[in-house]
Length: 475
Image 1 (tube, rainbow, N blue to C red):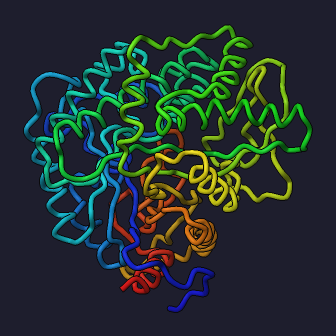
Image 2 (spheres, rainbow, N blue to C red; image 1 turned 60 degrees about the vertical axis):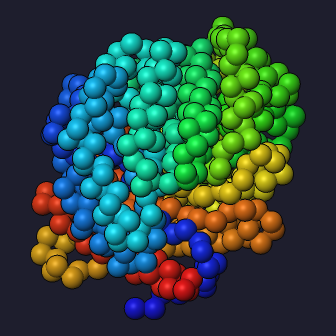
């Protein structure tokens, strides 16, 4: 099968990978001594969907890695489930959990699929979550100890990410309310969580360098460029406020080691309008500053942009967790209202499809954050409702031309930025295989490989065939 696409080749040495997260793929949430996460009791009480079996990656990782190798992937993003290593977040390690990750990493390396390993991907151990999660600075200490253990225990891993999507966690927990503890527009908690997560990241990066660990370390931000829906001074300011809250504050903290005067002016305006505050303690900024030059690479997740207009009414939001198109809304008092641009296509979950935004983000980081070194696109992809026929043979190939087109356009944006001097040298599709979604369950599929969640059978999608064609151009 020859597939027509815009991107004809990838550079030699380019990282082409698939992305996963422990809680979304492993299943087996109570097996071999794993402790509870912030999600287990919450999802059970909610009753909409279960994280078991997910994609049963805990048992089926050899099969998924064999597929990765066969279809040209040279890397995989995996995360360590903190509560598989330390069931309560601290204390004595669970040796069965440790042994599992050694087996997983060995299989990755044996198959020539380099593991890029994240320490925290939305799955705080419940014992720590119950004490305040990232709002409790004691969790930072626990995270540093957990990271130290992993660096010493897993020397076979040479590519580390500290925390995945700091803003998504803070925003979903304390603004949008679709992650536990389900607060809505708790602005103090959201901005404090952002700062404390940055501090945790910085302390771990500094530790990694002090320990003399081999390999590289960085973190992952999801960046959504924010544009005014109509170019007026009020809307431009609304876009600047939202950008500061979801992007700029985090990029400054990561790569400048400080929150610039302009950034804090915008953040303080948001805090003032929402009776909120941010607590920065003595010594925090020195830690951020020290780490700001020591990130070896940067993981950039990109899915969509935002269009906004000025808004001073009451805050409120509706989360689209079903794929019922047109049901989402977002209004943030004194910041912005999110609006749809009729010229921009959207997914069933109301996510904009705007590859130009990826180019804009890459160019912005390249120009504004000189401490940022190599960039990898660590997540990008499109979620869709997909169904393999019940009588499909084993060799059935599921045709997903929309995914090919989506990824193709975003790779084009990546390569354009690269041609203009941006050091971007890798792309991980979200996701490697169909997975469990935190807020959508099993009806939103992102994978290169289709998973029948009834029997865990894997089917190849045409996007995987296309990935193989692209991969072959790097040889």
